[in-house]
Image (cartoon, rainbow, N blue to C red; front, side):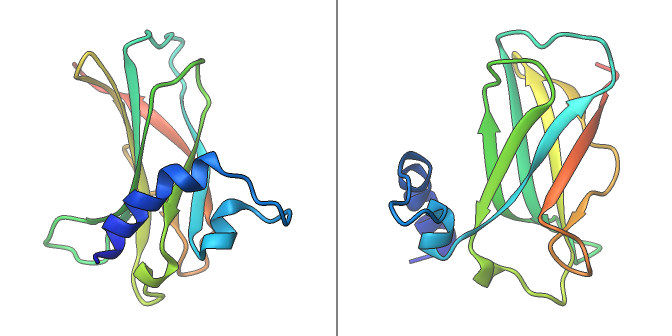
Length: 139
């Protein structure tokens, strides 16, 4: 079975269950996480219709679309900063490659905020934590 499908099937279980041994549920499954927060500088409140999407991407190849490794969609219950945690299979990470996290905020399907720079993670000396600062789009 494809690793992405396995991960998608395990994700609700991982989030819902605690670990009786004191370790995190993700560690107990052999999966790993990239965590951080999403924020923006504008003094604009998010509406209840806001949706935050965060993706872990393999951005190693220049002339092809980035390959998505993990994704989280969040319906925020509060204003920014909004925490996220992307669960992925470490077997999908090649230390020779380059990985980045990107995010968007949409309201009623309209793009409101997006990352406008590269936020590297995991390889080449980068950590598994990143705080993203999004910029307002011209919509």
